[in-house]
Length: 327
Ligand SMILES: Cc1cc2nc3c(=O)[nH]c(=O)nc-3n(C[C@H](O)[C@H](O)[C@H](O)COP(=O)(O)O)c2cc1C
Image (cartoon, rainbow, N blue to C red; front, side):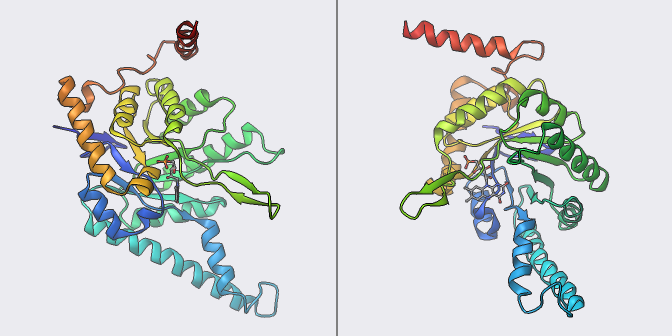
């Protein structure tokens, strides 16, 4: 069965991609994922905070404000280079051992570093770049215009500076999700990954402290991803990679029917192991065979909201069906 597809202009043997996570920081694991049928891997993000943390850990002997100011700069630069070099060495090794596309991932907060890191990823041989720009609008001073400006500034700069395909990974915190996604897709990027799952917050009531809830998603979270992929896939001018809550071959089929160009899996692999990729690919092939589809293009987007249709009407119809079923 032919499960070949195109994503970001890259040829994939399967639409199932391993999303950015701890598992994709390990080249042996990535080789295992390729053998289990992964169509591509998104490498663990390089986080600017992580580089800064490494700098702080290694420069505690010399403070930036003391008389060793020059030494501080020198050591800080050395530590940053060392952390980055390790990451890019891992990417080069992944490129030499894998035949599937290797997609780099960046998460920065300073404008300059988005650019510096993106160029380094391209030089390291990445096939594409996923910019983890899931902005959480925590500050009361931050408006949706500010968020939009950040997207525009970074995308425009990176598009001029790197030639490999770029995708943007977004979160769900938009007041005008459909409009923002469509506008992003008009900015010359090749894809949008919908959605990142942000770290959930919990409270330890014994110690009266904040703590993280589980990092892993659950299968119910698929429905939100499915909704937005179906609404937007025919209204955007770039590819969509569907992420969050993908656990089974059925989920993959649903997202393809909704119009996704690829899907990303992470939590499922943490819970069920890399073999889950094999099961998903087998299940996808069996479904296509049963339905008589020779290729993914024959059914991709079949259940998407059509370009000239109103999504609100399509979604409202589902809502009314719900009430029809329960009365
Ligand atoms: C342990 C762990 C580490 C992750 N690290 C990253 C990361 O470095 N960069 C990133 O963009 N997303 C990261 N994510 C988010 C995933 O790529 C993915 O968007 C999210 O987990 C939702 O997909 P899922 O439902 O398949 O888990 C991480 C997720 C987990 C569980």
